[in-house]
Image 1 (cartoon, rainbow, N blue to C red):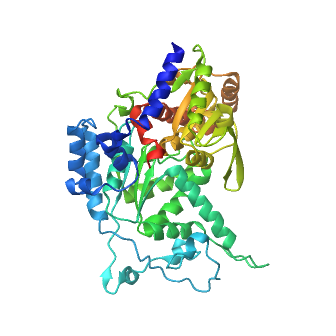
Image 2 (cartoon, one colour; image 1 turned 90 degrees about the vertical axis):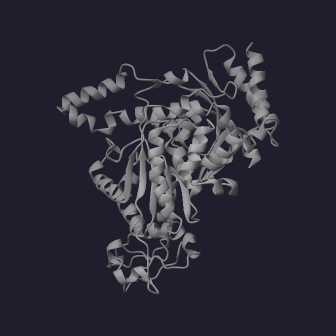
Length: 493
């Protein structure tokens, strides 16, 4: 029986990429290309009507389920869409600071037509007369939109609909993790290009605002998928970075599971992060999308069996056979691969073409991060993950990495096959404390910390991991559907 199910699963996987590929030209195909494909809509859809009428047509065709909160949020986005058609933040006119030593541009700056200066926003304040060019005033930047709500409520789907209808070429859609990696990469390159400090002379350089200006030169609309702050390195620069982006006229649309007040909850040195919340609220409409429905868990056609439990008979053999059959279609041999990620080497022990066969320990028990997972997602369209454990609350590092891994795979449409120790909806065990966690609690008691103080210590709380893991389970549920597997077929792109 197991062998029969396996053959049926394999036939399903190949059937998606051959016999039934015509679905991509149908309703779901257009929906994935327009809503999740990060490209502009085809001419017939663009001519069909505005954003709201298109959403209504998807509801009438039962491609989407009608939702009043979704429609209300889309109305807000539709207003922004109308403004963004003719909006531009170019030229970014900032006065040249006096007596500033010249420095060679980074690779990103070499192609820019305007000068980006290495100084702080205070030194580059925009004069009123600078906001005009040949008598024409620059338009006032419209307010962006920050959409928050529980997992699976349709936040990213709405933002992608909005993005596909924006008739402005200077737009960018990006996962927030990938964006911050790019920011840190730019900061590093900019620091490398700075003139060397002279002995006995102290010169202050601020690389964050020039990077914000550099990004503003490239885009006037940033759409962030999964806005979340879990890293102190990001938390401490967000206020200055986004103040620079907003000062340069960049409009931000973002989705998040957290309302602004709960971003970086329990994070280290959160007091330094809190001012960013005010900056975000000043420049974005805050929209709550919390219907209590996880649309990813609604009944959809499954793409065969893709989630195996290790205790099931012949589960590991079934996964082995599946890998071999998928690898047979690749123009490659089974071999290790070494990926280069920002100058570091990340070894994948068993790959074949665009297929990777990995153990959980290989992906989530090594010091890997979003940049590593993003590179894996770029290189492989199908990843098998074996030995996924039954997570305990104390396994914070592994849970955080697994969540980041799935976030990046989901955003890049990577298809996954999982061999785990527990069913998907019981993958996180929130049971009694382990011995290590009990020792942590004892230390809190001995230090005489109040409950309120102890809750603020990220070291001793797993609230953020538990919250994020709900999103992981929701996404893994959708990643097992036929529609997701169709959208992840890179052979048709």
